[in-house]
Amino acid sequence: MSRVKYTGNKPSNPSKPTPYSDIKGQGKMPYSQAVESDGPNTMDGIVTKGQSRGMGGALRGGKFTIC
Image (cartoon, rainbow, N blue to C red; front, side, top):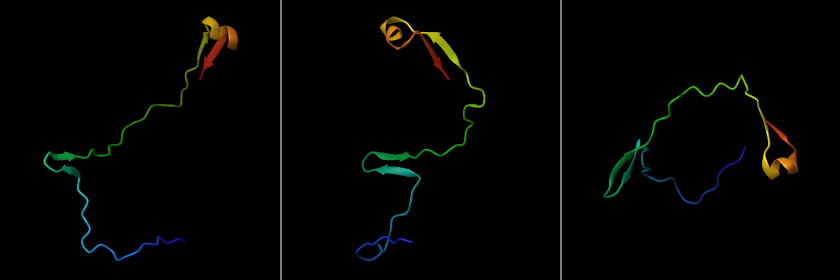
């Protein structure tokens, strides 16, 4: 187990967390809230095949596959 070493005492009155950012002279800006959402379905993959064109196709081979 490790410990963090520091010099001095704990602060007597630490600041409380707020759900907004307070910019002096410019107002308050609220922080965004975390929202759960559905991600993309990665169970079914799509394979794309094609023919390379130009000098890159001549140097690296004629066909490519993107999985």
